[in-house]
Image (cartoon, rainbow, N blue to C red; front, side, top):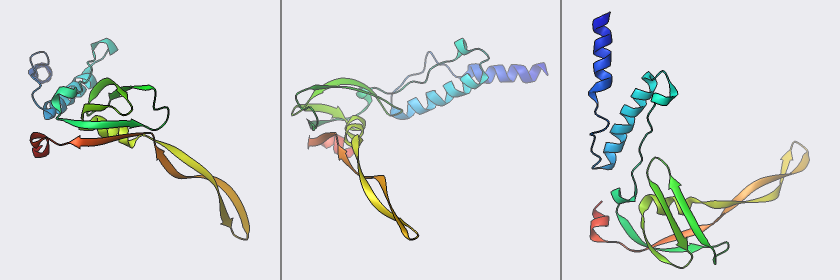
Length: 153
């Protein structure tokens, strides 16, 4: 019984959280998997660890022209934190910026839904329902210049 507990303790302590080096994006997946294993074993909330997310230095940057369709005179404060990237910045419409690809994809996906009343038939009766008929993009990030190193990645 005691031998099994010692083996389990060695498994938990075999991963060195403090000395782990992040060199690639895949290293974050390895580290976060070990953190999740550690957190499942923790009894108290204060012993749990946080997962880490790569910042913009781990990604190639592209020269990008940014446009904001609604309120173009205002500066957009961007905060993207998902499993791919942790990025904070400010973008002004019409400006050219060096942005990593996860930020470009995130901004290009943001859209405002458009709703309209649509007639639908239920048997013999015709009803009008409000449905989403489309989307209007909020931002546009157009890549202006690819570098040779970025195209190889």
